[in-house]
Image 1 (cartoon, rainbow, N blue to C red):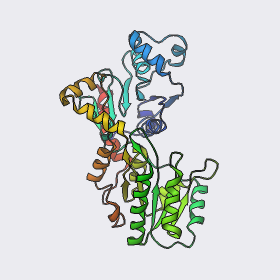
Image 2 (image 1 turned 180 degrees about the horizontal axis):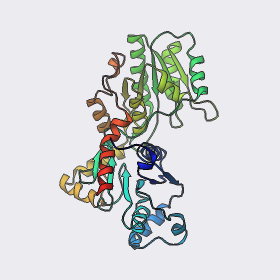
Image 3 (image 1 turned 90 degrees about the horizontal axis):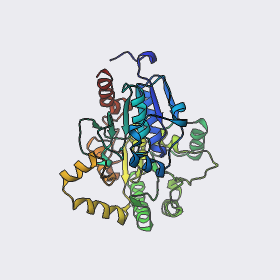
Length: 356
């Protein structure tokens, strides 16, 4: 193992990502692999990004406000997510005399070649390349558990002696709908789990969760469930549910939520939602183009594969981190994932890139 003292770890700049999940991954990556970390909060608008790409801004040096903001000492690594920071990352690398390395997570929304490393996950279906490493889960570790969160859960479960199953509910997304049919199916599945196992369900809503989902669970389960509707001004029980319940069931719309659940080390089941028609259509259109052509276009930044969350679920299942709902309480996970296990291949590739 290399010396892990801060003075021997690479320095890095984290260019802000527009998505909260991507931003958490960037900060996790920086916190686990880097020494000195500097973050930047500003994000260019999409119109400016497109104009800069068309005008070839990546070939021009930093100027104006950005020249003052991005200034020496240059970092060893520039961490980015999504396509809106790619040009700035390239200009930072150019200004550093090509010493800084660019590490992108997720999907770059840009050509592969200018990036030193792309750290992706199965749902993005990126084709392989020399600068791509795919890890089985996003780098979304469970959040720290505030005492208020733990206290709220403890009080709500006072007197409950049955095994507890945390039910983490998402909602509509770009790929899925959490509509009436999904609500009915999930309510039926969870009712069956409670009846067969004797478990007590602890359901957490999110800002995207339809009100009908918790209403259906309340109607079906009565006192066999504790329900926490989303309330922005209330103490959030979610971190304590992740940490303290015996097992977890998560809706299939969120890669971040699945990663947090799996990285808790608890048994996890996925509650499937219904795919949106446009998501099904996008995959169908992609199927009209040969795989080799799609891959070539993707590597050049001219094609964006449709997100495929069931592929992420399948990979997690193949590792034993996700199991059927009917077997959720069959016992502990044999080899639960850890941040270190996910990061090991990333660390190796980054160290090789810096040595090169």
